[in-house]
Image 1 (cartoon, protein in one colour):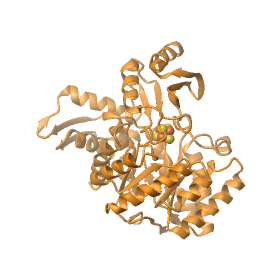
Image 2 (cartoon, helix red, strand yellow):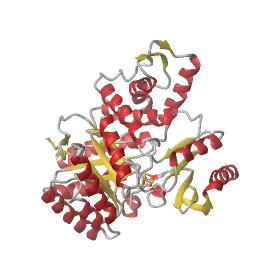
Image 3 (cartoon, helix red, strand yellow):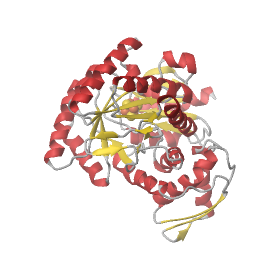
Length: 431
Ligand code: SF4
């Protein structure tokens, strides 16, 4: 078995290197001042790799300026261009970023053309020492794959394997792979299957970037990420992690670092049902407890558990323990006592204040237990990435939103001030 590593600027991941923590700016990349300031804060918080939205050529140029400004300050944290769709933008970004994130299946509807463009991209990356992340998300697989395999972990793995086999043929190995999903079970199963498939079919392991997409904010966002990412880390799967929160991205870093620390501990026995946890902070408690208990719940090895815990020496009350238990059960998809919020973390493409909007949606929809409600920042990626949500609130731009029922846009051009009320009416009418 060959274990590959991926070099992103000064940071190397995979093949026994330390798990790298990463995040993504939610600034407009064209706002150089704001983006440099956020990168500075992320680097100071201990972020090892920073991603920025790079949807067009102007953003590529801005990214180059951001990199120069940071390097002039002595900040060498590698920068990743988040491109997704355009091969031309990816080619340009590969000359200024340390790494480019793409979904090569989106380069063209014609698979042969997408392959040609991908080959050209690897050549530029080789010349400039740039790494690639091939990032496929559940819910954004093309029809070519879903018609054969469905929108399943198998479909995600088959889609990414085509590109990894191509990397092997081209002799380009400076690559990381991600297969994110908002559903923790789908996410864990996809990465596990990819791990086995790389071993069986390639005889080599590309480094894996782990993340739960659209995890939301607050306790539930932290617990969901800790369950999905932690389950895989406890099995030795994963080389770099991103905890996605619909909050200031700097808040993601301590959570990810706590998760990395927790992963250094021996995992709890998979049939263990009684846990005792002492933590210094509430955040440490959420991460540690989710990491220790979550994997066995997620995989159905246990159905329930008892927990005693202290935070900074204070014992958790029964009400606090029950509230955590409800959140963990839901994150592990074992019992649904609240609505399931699928909220993107926001990025340079976000078309409104997603953090406050998510709070408004949560306040207005708390009664709909078990209903999956997506809150997505942009109409370009949002509809694809909200995967199996029952309802969606998606920013259109210009102060307007589109409401979705399943994958169908059912109300377009709604003024943002009316969006939450209309969403509640839509859910009430439909369930
Ligand atoms: S859905 Fe759009 S706004 Fe939200 S993180 Fe993805 S690209 Fe950014």
